[in-house]
Length: 165
Image: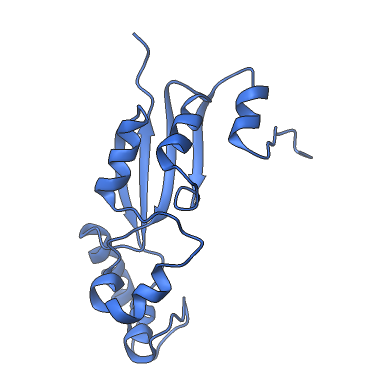
């Protein structure tokens, strides 16, 4: 507000009060919390110009730790505050039902190899805590491999609102 931005407590308030549509919207780590993801995207669509874009990020259901550590990681991953869990296919389906086309899907892994090794050893996350014997080169390879194989901890999807005909 101090910088002159319009701030709204909800999408419905923004839809009611905004007179102009926007070029680009961001929803970062939100869609997994809403009651109805398709309805959420449909509401965002009302604020977007034709050819406008929306960037959505969410935890990736295909996170490598879901494969490596089902028993330990499931309890951590399936937290009560998340109503939904998405992979590329399910998020793409929601977007298309809401009337968007998918421009780009990206996989971003935020944690290094040490975090996975801590999970294996201790059964708990250690975030970005370093581990002796794991260097920057190993971390870079780890992240690149997970992102390439769509097993990163986060999924980003850029949506486009098709122009009106």
